[in-house]
Image (cartoon, rainbow, N blue to C red; front, side):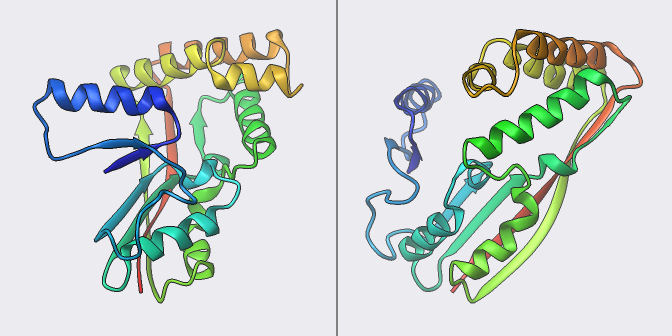
Length: 204
């Protein structure tokens, strides 16, 4: 069972599963804090890049702990955007980072969630928590084109862009600078970036 707060995402997941002949999954619109499942209903809850966006991550983890019950596992993985490293640096990419961190926090999220997962799991009551880490590295021409192009588009046409404007974090010139920074980085053969992640496997 896959859940998301967005009806559009749930519809897309349902459509893609049907197109690919996957019939052992279902997707529902649901709330991470109260997904509507009974105690111990699942063996595993997996959350990828979710907790960083939640205002109450410990509450969400406690809910997931309840629905896996004893013997079940909660696995989570989140970026630590604050610890991201990019080369070559530029004014546009520095603006992206400060703007992204400011917007995420203004929205109630934690852009440094990766480093906090283990502590959050302990606070949520898990008896056993194994922490780990990994990185995304973008350096090949294809990877830079994808990641840089993704963020160039997000800078002007996404909830990121509208959030920056609506919350007064920046104006159109800021978004244009971010877009240019990412396009220049993607075109630079020396371009390199890592995004570190925290990971947990929690039970009990």
